[in-house]
Length: 85
Image 1: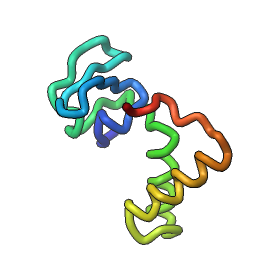
Image 2: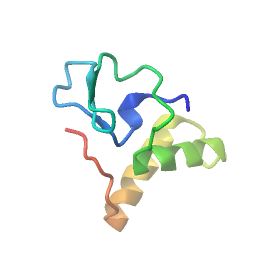
Image 3: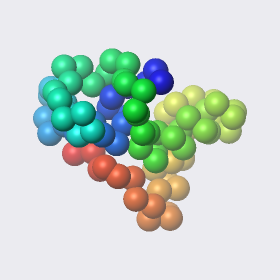
Image 4: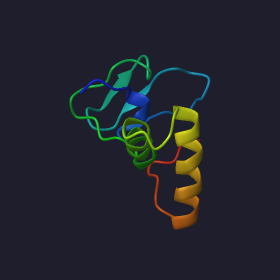
């Protein structure tokens, strides 16, 4: 799977000024959260829904899809685990 660690539920970071983080699945530090991820990636619900909206042409761009997802998750009170700080 070629995605980014930061989109994965296993990626944990506590410092928004640091591009790195920690993989909860493999118990190891990740130097750059924006680099391609491993094959064990599990997308956050918001990321999965964004991919769906953009790839199926419901939204023209990523920012519009992100806004629609925020509204949907807020309206449905769907858990977007893990929450970003």
